[in-house]
Image (cartoon, rainbow, N blue to C red; front, side):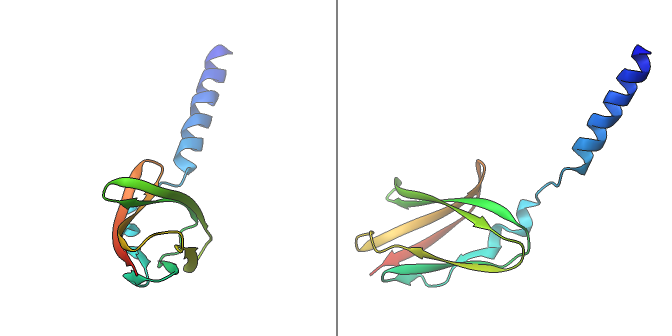
Length: 111
């Protein structure tokens, strides 16, 4: 009886882990963009893929983190307006993450 339970439990774990959707990062790395490289008060993030996912973003100035925020992307292509009015004039980088994996880095100027 112990062997049947062990086999059943092992099969359950295998099926559960197999059914989990894995993310192919190469399909989305270059499909996140900021519409303008020169920004006055707000920017538009463009997600040009269909995957539904939570993304973390961090804004850096000279390797100092200025702000971080989270975007819940829905299924399908999507654009999200972000407020950047709090930034002073200068050059910044926007890093996008899923978990600890850096997807891409976008350089922009605040005018």
